[in-house]
Length: 237
Image (cartoon, rainbow, N blue to C red):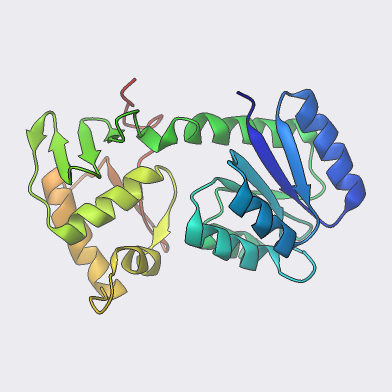
């Protein structure tokens, strides 16, 4: 089944060129020229990837990305004509999976797309049974269990939520604020300053050597991420 890519850009000429390039590579392409149209497409399509321009009329690309992340984990590649690193940081912190600056080489864009689809096409380690797998770890969101090398681990509800969040998006860095917002429920809000404490306790349970963590990595000045399978871990087939 062909994978569907949503292109979001207000430059009609660029949309046409990108659509031709992607279609020639076997992708099904749909397009949107502004943020509102993009959000309607996200609601109605089973998308494999979104390529999203930052500078959009009506709703900015950053705002579109925020709204997408409220409802979907679909991979998002941001496009921008700006080269300032601050724009890239903002996009990545909001949940973008990659960033390309205009003008770009179509070969580079295709390479980025293939790399992301290879990674996310395997559901970030989610097997057909819904279990998340990363190296020796297995997390079952439905059964609410975690095992390492087949041995059950006793995690607190907060630790379980943090681990599930990271394992669903291996390689993506989450800020402490993003983690706290993702695992907080109702009146039970977890202040971001306590995330380090929970990560330390979680590492003590899931890492072979908590002092040299290989599963939950620290991203300096940002937060934490689960290692990508290509670095230190392997996926179950």
